[in-house]
Amino acid sequence: MKTFAALFISILFFAGFCKGQTNEFAPIGAKWWYDHFYDINYADTSYDIGYVLIESVADTIINGINCIKLTSISVSPQGDVSPFTDPLFVFEDSGRVFCYSYDDSLFHTLYDFTGEDWYAYDFIYGSGDSVLIQVDSVSTIEIDGVFLNHIFPVYEPGSSLSFFSSVGERLGSLGYLFMYSGGDDSYYPFGLRCYEDFEITYSSDESIACDTLIYLNIDNNISETDGISLIVYGDEVIIKNEKNIDGELVIYNQMGGAVLKQKLEKTTILSMQQYSIGTYFITIQTFQNIYSYKILKL
Image (cartoon, rainbow, N blue to C red; front, side, top):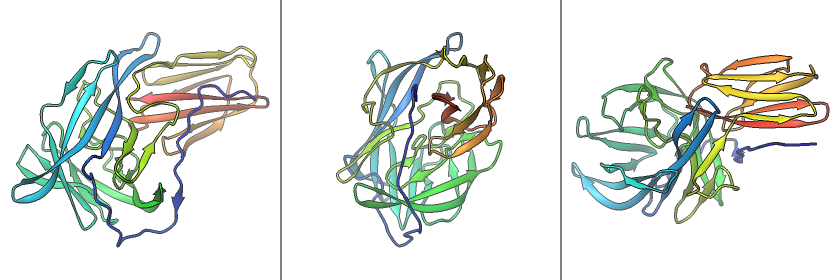
């Protein structure tokens, strides 16, 4: 059985919700690495991918509140380093994480791990926009022997703010740590690559180093035997099944949940417009082989 470009993220989930457990968010020395996309070429569906590194660097006081200073750098695919202009400041209190907004010089809720709904704000561009985050379900995850609350939120459809599928204590969103306006054209970072602090280490893909610079070509014409090919063009994924072989097509989100299952047709056109920004994995299983493709929805 053949497997091409297969990549799956697995996290061990436990039932229950440790509501009384508090874990310090952004302890000093904590680091987050995120994919950062550059030079998207729709003609051959290729991406140059650098990374953004966020680091918890110091205790400080803002508006009389003890908080943590976070700094960020962006590293281009060519290795050029650009610091982000303004640091951001966060603190945790009773399971709620707050972030400082330059827009109004106040702290607003970034995450709420108590299981309650909350309003989140555009902390990056200072648009003043907010969106209601409704908690669909809560569980705990175990990383390096530490149990952390994990929430699966939903948010107002049609919002201009970008949010992501799940949020973990310390990890933050598995998309990006802060919400931002989805209408911006600069392709902000997306996809938590790695996280580490004094106690735990998380990696979404053990085969890729946290600070790897990637050239990724997603135009996968690879299966001569089965006559199956996949082409990405804009928001459309076109799958050709030239020999009309029986099979099943499944799309998984970055947490491993199946968001679409259907029979493999001779020609299948999938629109990614209905899915939120993120990483998806398309698998095609025939009688003899399994083919896997990684798709990045921006």
